[in-house]
Length: 377
Image (cartoon, rainbow, N blue to C red; front, side, top):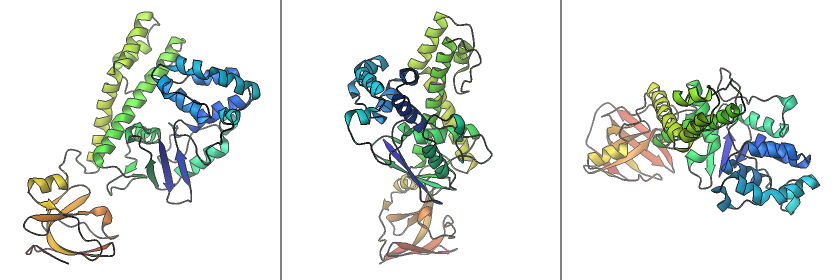
């Protein structure tokens, strides 16, 4: 899985895959220092998938089949290589002689400083930062841009990309829609339709709640009573994590995590939050798309000739991203708002418009009268 962020203000791109730079860089640093204690502490804080990704990020081979068997199976398989690497004070790449991926950094859930302007800085103490400070500052400079285009590389679903989940999760925490999509403005421009943006936010709330519960369980079992738990965790589970340590309570907490109770609860909350954020922008997640409306009116949607096509017709339907233009008795074309000339007003419903394409560029002339629909090329 890779995600690439492109800044509109700077010549900066950040390609990412797997886990957070702070995790992978910390693991690399611990190996190169020969610190078995630090390596052990880092790996113990990870689940099986995170451990596999982090170990691969520092050059160790991890059999995919072992991930489903859990952390112990992964560690038992990789332990000899880790011990040798610690003895030589090198990471897995140097140990095996494999070339290190150039320009690649790892992806994961960053923590942003709570400032009025969202998504501008990462919150870290430079004096005590255990990772690559130069890399962290490079990432920070990207996020300080006014807008970013996010390109999703590889086949991983958008709901499994940690960078997107991080943005969605922190946006919901602040009551902000951080993504731009379908021509809707936003700091992080993604090539996702509104329905998938909703799915992304639901997945983000699930990830935040489950990881918070796991971290809370670990701290609670160690005797910590001042837990900072996500409010997306069910109240019943929060009470257990803030109560007296007992075996029965521990079993109940583990059950809520493994059974999907926390995940389901958080998903409902996330869906509600993103729906409200969209409603505040005048968007209805349940509204039919122009394609659905065209099908209901039995229009055949045709692709316009973008080189030299000329069309005259009536706006018969709209959604949040496009207009449906009836051009003949049985056919129509879809005109996305994002493709309209800069400064051009969106066509009003039932208005008559003339559209001309010339080598990919579109020009729209709008009138207040509805005339006879037709096409000319």
